[in-house]
Length: 278
Image (cartoon, rainbow, N blue to C red; front, side, top):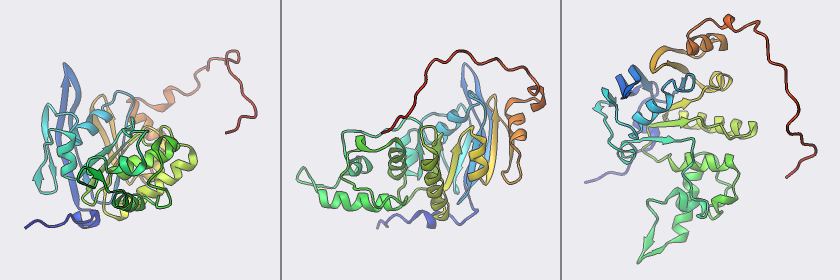
């Protein structure tokens, strides 16, 4: 007899180990990840940072089944975890919101949210049920006032980002990876995103927050993991960490080496604008 999926808050007790990585490595001719080991806990935000090319996206994609590791192993809860595809990872409750949004602009919010499980009868979509299910999904991230029938193309990029998050938040979500989620958001939209991240934490969802925006990490993260040249070079609580410390770990040399260097003078104006509105 099957049982309904339990809400995310019932999946793992706060602070319990959800996902463990053991010596994960990935080679593309040369190593791009080498011996990365860390544990993700329920209800925490783990910041994953590093310079461009440090291996952040590769590690995230391994966790979410988009890339297979060359070596190492993972465990989800008490079971081995080696997803061969994104679909397989999602079936185990591990989901990812990528920088490139996968929404279909010509479809409605509701259709995007439930694209792989549209309620239908005799080949016809049951619109009232579709919109009801979508409204419940939107309410999970505080967007209950958004009309599910709205075409996605009419939404701002920040709202689209939140719809993408809602699409990846199912009742069985245990791990949610956010890859550079604020890259296209305004400050106001970023604040709203942070509020929703805190909601997810309260539900017991473990969140990997991939970013190199250090001021954001200090605001949202419980712990921070620093990658450099494919290796995990630091893992510590976020509280009390200075930006200069993180920069030093990211680049592998003291920050003061850059201090006092002459700056290039600004060139001629290439573009100017005044009084724009929309």
